[in-house]
Length: 176
Image (tube, rainbow, N blue to C red; front, side, top):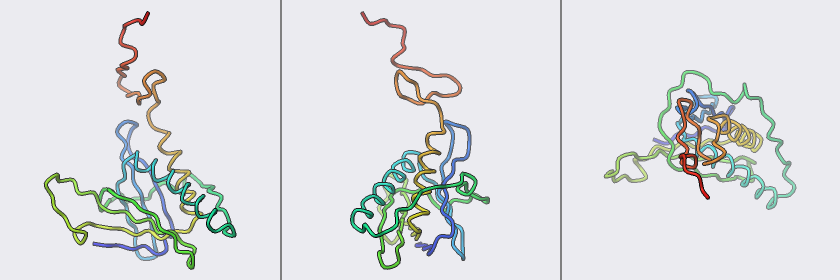
């Protein structure tokens, strides 16, 4: 299955659940349909950073392009019900079409079975065609969203679980 949303009217990210148990989603809407996918927290963080770098590189290559602001409204970038993801994202890529001044974010499904042999024809793909402003806003919101999770332990740099935290650096031994 290959789905193309061109253009995306909205492109959103959100997390549902308590910190430490959240599930992250990407959701986009075109005139015809809405597509929701599951994305891992680290993927959203990496994607957000990659989008910002991608846009910086585009500006270097095409200095006459207007630099998108990346301003966003949190309310506008939260996903809308129903939340019915069609697959979990495995691979993400970005491509720019200069003539259209649009970026295509392609998300491919992750295959979870270790013995599975799949061909490209069997992998689900969604192509999200968006403008640069939408993607920069999504990137800034994505970074903000990821940081809203569990607090980070200042000693071990691991997330602190709400039910308690075992810190390997605070194991009761004093270093002399």
